[in-house]
Image 1 (tube, one colour):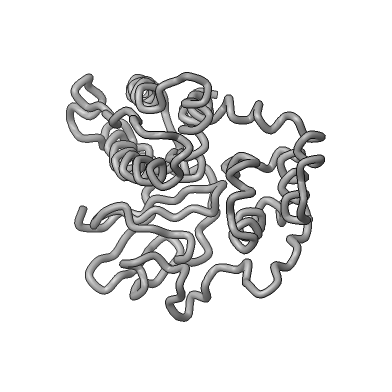
Image 2 (cartoon, rainbow, N blue to C red):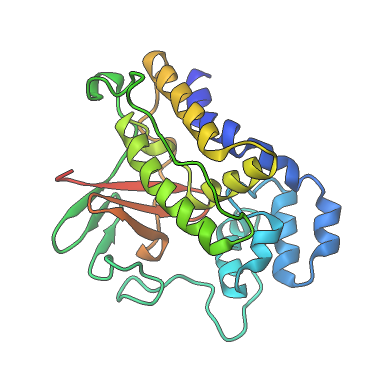
Length: 262
């Protein structure tokens, strides 16, 4: 029970309230104008929407992206994703780089729990034991310290730049306290921002508070190294955080790979 609490604490504080936005299933279906939007509502209604964008954000995506977002949750429910005319809903083939492979990863190879690049090798990060953490990382001086958002939430580009910078700080900080297997995907991070800010809650402040709670729990609660055996399918799901960290996600599941030299 204690392990479960720690594993879900970040979600409970930051995206748990977002689930309420998905409760109006009938309203979702009535507003759906395409097969993909209808499938989105079915996935949400079936309780498989963890990590999916809000209905509004989902509709802003290109159909091919919508299909990619829905592929895994729909598969878990035995539902078929409608074909998208003229585009492919599948990620780029692993045998060669494609437009969906992030810059800096084109010459890398995904090998299960490892990513091999020309200049460095990355290993999947799990949760670490309390004894293995560096001295002082659970003390008050180690803070997440994300800058408050000061732009317009309606400006998608401004929001994305802000969240990208915040996420690039969040991932290393989670690794610092040994929670590599408990990180949020960027989509969940994005959804938490909009849900909290629209509710009058300062996103940066709430994330900082949650980080402090995680630090306190780390002092007394045990964690599993990993919570599942699932692995990313290809590099189209991955992005570079910094020279020592690569993050992959399929919207619902997040994987953090750390350089062996980090």
